[in-house]
Amino acid sequence: MNHQLTTEQIASYRENGFLIIEDFLNESELETWRSAVEEAVALRDENRLPEGSYHLDRKVTAGDEAVFRQRINLWMDHAGVRTLMLDSRLGRMAADLEGVEGIRIWHDQALIKLPWANPTTWHQDNTKWSFVSDHSITIWVALDEVTIQNGCMFFMPGSQKKRRDDYPAAGNHVGAMFEAYPDLGAMEPVPVVMPAGGCSFHNGLIVHAANANMTPYPRRAFTCAYMPDHSRFNGIPNVLPKRILNTIQIGDPLEDGDQNPLIHTYDPKREGLTGPV
Ligand SMILES: O=C(O)CCC(=O)C(=O)O
Ligand SMILES: [Fe+2]
Image (cartoon, rainbow, N blue to C red; front, side, top):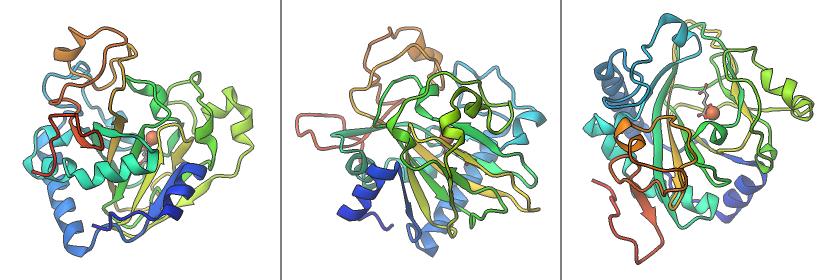
C-alpha cells in the first residue's frame, strides 16, 4: 500500500479538497480488497446496514439500486474487511491530509454502480452525517478501473471551503444542488479517472457527484469516511445504531469504539487505539 504522503500532496489536498493516488494498491493487495468486499457484500444480502441499525427497516428495493448498490459498515460483520479498515496507516493518511490529531471510522461502504446505473447527484457528504466538521475525509478505492464511461466521480476544486446545508435530498435531478446554490453550477468540475487499485481522498465538504455507468460492467468502489476524534453528535441519526441513539444527547462526543473506532491518533494520552489486527 502506497501510504507515504509528500508535503506537495498534502498541500494540494488542502487547496483543492481532493487528492488522487493512482498506484495506491499493488496487484495482490487489490485482489485482497476485491475478494473481501465481494464476500462481505454477498453476506450482507439485501441489508444496506448492519443488524441493530436505526434505518434497518428501510428495505433495499430495485429503485434504490438505480444509482448504486450500497452496503454500509461491512467492517462490522466481515473479518477480512475489518482487517483492511482498522489499518492505522489509513488513519494516519487521513489525519495528515486534514491536519487533525486523531481519526475515527465514520462508516465504510461498498458503492457498486451497476451497469446502466444513474449518476450520483451533486452533494456535500458532511451535511448528511451525525457530526459537523470541516475535517471529515473519505478514501474512495477503485476496485475496477474508473472511467468517464463507467461512472467516475467529479469534484468542484476548492468548493470544500464553504458549507452548504440547504439543498434537496438525492433523488432529484443530478444538479438539484445548483438550484439552491447557482454559484456552484457555474464551476467546472474535474473528472477523477484512475486505474483499478487507485484511490482518491476527498474532504467531507467538497461538492462532488459521479457519472452514470454507461457500460455493461459494474463499477466497484470501496470507501471509508473518517471523523476527527472528539467530534460531537449533531442530532442527525444517519448510520448510527439504535443502541447509541437511545442514550446519546446532542453535543455528546461520538466515541463508542465499537461504532467509531479510533484507528490512528497522535495523542499519547489517548487509550483504546485499535490499530491493525
Ligand atoms: O461513488 C459514487 O458514485 C459516489 C461516491 C461518493 O459520493 C462518496 O464517496 O462520497
Ligand atoms: Fe459523497
